[in-house]
Image (cartoon, rainbow, N blue to C red):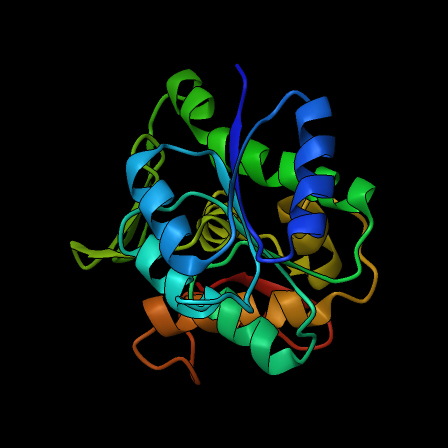
Length: 231
């Protein structure tokens, strides 16, 4: 099955280089050079992943990401020259699945695209093979068929990575995971001091599922080691 990618990048040279490489990788590629054009394409054409620059004319990348997340959980990979932790936290907190800074390696970008699509599509086959597509812990429920989550029977909106992290913990009740293990299992790549990405996702996940994020009951911190599901 040929996957479709939307590149949202106002630098035409970068857009063309990435488009050409991805087409060689057998992807179908759509391009948009401003936020409004991208939103129109996104609303009218199903895609499997979005490569999103933050600095866009007409509608900036952060606002575009907000609007896309109102409609879909399609994986979004931010590509941007803005490298501050504030921008990374903001982008990931609004629902981006990954972040890569310019200048980037086209090989690394391609690997991250493949990993993001694989993560986003792996659950339906798993659910069909498993005896149950519902995972429950306390008041929290994950549905692997619909890729959805509920807390106290009320729907909560999770990003792809948040869902994957929560599924990892809920399927391994007693296991403690280090940050390195979480990164390798969820991001599917080697861990090179990527602590900030883990911290951002755990914090945002706690804000969505914990009554008191500063005193978490679902995702507990095991000091000096990592995290585990609450007892």
